[in-house]
Length: 124
Image (tube, rainbow, N blue to C red; front, side, top):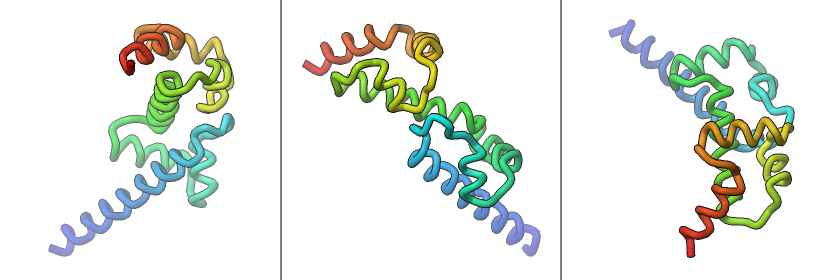
């Protein structure tokens, strides 16, 4: 029973930590210099440790999570605003427009421009 209680407490601490990481990430991922170091500084913890715990608990790396958050926001902005694509690149924390285009096409199967056209048409 003691071992189970210790394990449960450890799991609760890890779950709280993951929630903190996710909360901070969702607040700050749009900052261009955002990284695991930003979160580590805010939580006063070691960045490598946070990265390991995040991967262990969620199954994905911290950078994969940040990329997913940024890409979801880019898709939302493309389909719901007329914001120029270059502005969306900056607003979502990407600092390299050609890199954004390449990633966007790889992940979504089309260019940001095409995504916007198709999703604006679908919403009419």
